[in-house]
Image (cartoon, rainbow over all chains, first blue to last red; front, side):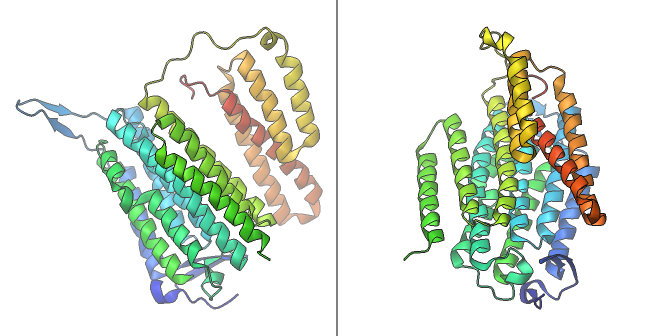
Length: 221
Length: 199
């Protein structure tokens, strides 16, 4: 097994769990990302959903958006699933597993708001889902090209200087962008119309964390 | 001479470019949903181009992710467009009253002969056909249970591989039949998808 050389970005190696040539490793960076994901998952489990208030303009009427127990249960489950997928993506030592976890985050993000009966939210979730689904194409393509050119998917092995082609890195980055972050913010802001604060926050946290992780991976390989 | 992999990659990426172009031009939501599936299949093609055993192992999770995203999005589409109502008058031919038993049995038996993954698909088709013709009310939970047991048997077989390698043939048999049942139940879930409270 080659020496670990990805430490320049993530800090010193704290622990490594080898499964054949796939090594799940923990550095201060991935450890702290993992802890943040864990923390927010715990928040999602223990907290109660907020109730948004809508004020009708020009009157004194105020609507409260209720979250029914059924909806609550489903959304909490999806939020926890999203947290677990994020934690998996944070410590995965295998590029393909990472892409799978990232696409799982994409699915669960849609799931968090799918039970909301609001036309705007459903529309946004659908559009976001289309983007997330097409984003799996560059994600998997990036992983597949990495495998074809270097013969391995292990980040540990790749960090020894296997020479991942630039196009594979770009595809991976593009895929992660599609699954969760910046350019598609418009759709995501609409998702936030869904009531229930701790759950929608997980949408944000997971995409931020996976962006941080993909930067670490791209700099390491 | 250009390497075969490069040619394959060029073809696949041309396909991806076409799919994405179509996605960008399409305005109808349902058609866009169908086009994303096209793009998804092309990503599987890119994985398949690697052409090793590992690629085969990677296609399966890729396919599962694709199908689950497609199913989730279809559910959202149904909700978004408020298409809750089950149709009262379904497609109905006389052959659907007489054939299911024989055809489903034949497909399931042939699936058992094939065994493993492809056998599961064939047997699953038989079960899909059965549910399509006979209705599906109570079978949903049964399918979930069967699928769960098949999964447990599959994991059990893997544990045998790891800890008692001398009984590998026994484990191969268990894993083969469990995968068959698992794929079969997955396929037949599609046969039960018609909206309603179970979907």
